[in-house]
Image (tube, rainbow, N blue to C red; front, side):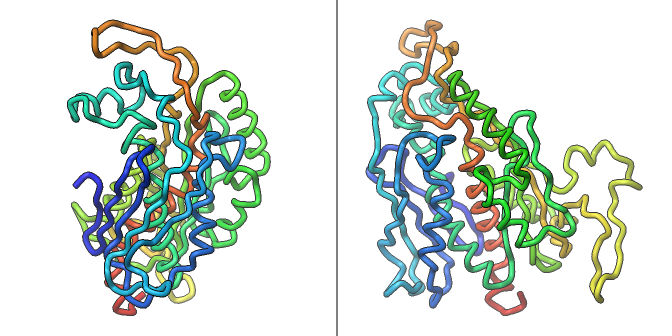
Length: 365
């Protein structure tokens, strides 16, 4: 079940980084839904490799081919399956990795779990390549949520020690989400954009990599979505966001910084605004007790540096259990954050639609 997700919906992701194709099967898309394929293609292009100097030079079109579930472009009620063909693979780049695992990657743990039968090329099914089918599902659910007035947007909040400005946790708007795409990198500040580009270029030249934080906002979510304890909104979003291989942490609202505050500072006072209960601040990130409060949902995901780097690292030869040096060859991102931004949006969309599907179908949203 490690490749599947959902309670009210069900998605299953399949394939490997260098297999003939990767794909996703989606159950829960309502019959009669007609996907906007141009909007989906534009969304997938934000994640696709080879589209800028800051990503891996591996060039893939990432054009989804729907093989069932759509009739004349419209959902027919059957599960939807879409595939993306891998057209630019170079398995030879990974010939040594079945014996010498990359530090920071899943090579070693996969080797032990699958008893040496794992696919080492491109990271197999542990690769960030598997976020392409995640984005197919997320892109479709974003369209369905958009019809209900719910919008999702994310930006790079920081790379290394360079920070972008934050979303306004109480007043983030759809315009803020659109403004992100005006810069070369998906950030709100042109100054941060320029500094981050310089840092990524420097890492690329040195054969190294850098990580950072992605901030995501969801607006238009009504009060009352989610369940306490095991099926809270934070729980479900977190589960889906951790499907992105490079994610190592998540926080909501004021997060870890809020834990250092007094309750009198971190608590969000209630107020009435235009006849609706709101909060003056949004340190709770739009979720209280696992249930949405009606304020924007705000969360941040920590993304580690790309483990595949050209710089020399210490590893071991599994066949002889001897220490050895490793310099990773092949095509890799010096910073995965620019391409991970739509992945975080997709994960949030999948999680939210799973939680809110019944309300949307009943017309209460």
